[in-house]
Length: 349
Image 1 (cartoon, one colour):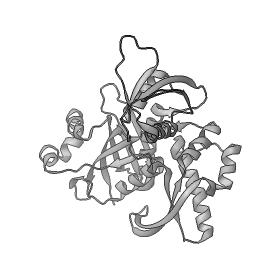
Image 2 (cartoon, rainbow, N blue to C red; image 1 turned 60 degrees about the horizontal axis):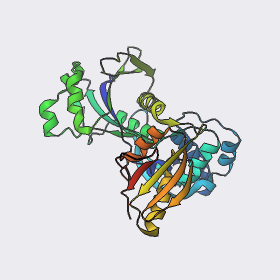
Image 3 (cartoon, rainbow, N blue to C red; image 1 turned 180 degrees about the vertical axis):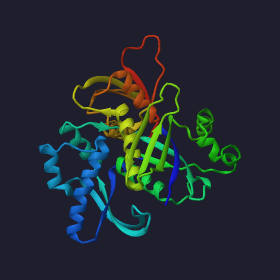
């Protein structure tokens, strides 16, 4: 069967699933204890791949010990049954072991093992897909579509810790967008239409069947300063999806990966703290940040606390990241302000 798919993917660096980052699904044959133990070990391997951004995690002594006792890192587990597609597109039922891991313990393991940390602020991928049928009919898939390639893309995105979305393709988009616009090279119009999803940048890709019967995946950025074309050739749709998602994940990881080697000392003040509960929430929030290795309190005032932090990031980068989530808001400096930055706590009091 001839297959021709044209894909446009927009990435948004706004991953909001920091909690679900530490929840991993692993396919298992049964719910018995043997399969569960194997599944927990595999889940830990997948989680370390997700947290570090590495497709192959180096197995040093600390990592090897963790694999021997993977249950020490989990908080809970359960099972779900989901309909899946095999590489030929046939539907089957698959049991998954769902394992939740302790976030702070995993981050400590990664840091002590000398591995990188890929920040949980991950890309969200918005995929515009034109499906070309055997008879030549072309349709744009929406979030309600059910096609093998999109399922495989979503599955691999869960493995790598990034989010894949399809457009709504509602009446507004139907009135402006047709398959010929996507296939005709109207890059500027595509970028404009994608703005409602707040994309960071746009990737154009193509998946089609080669004369040899393989699936060829090509993609590029429509940016004027980037005309480089990437491509792989695979035997099946699931491998094509894996290569596509891996490329996007690898590219994003290079922009936000941390190595906890050289640490910077950063002094900040947090204002707006009212009472012990508010103080505990601020302290817990700072300790939970992936880009903070150490939190020390240096001074306590009526509604303000001074902290000395250790971070792999510079002060400027730290201030930008800390201000991004909206819990800590960077206060405008006054004329006699020192080098110490003052944040206002906007989280729960």
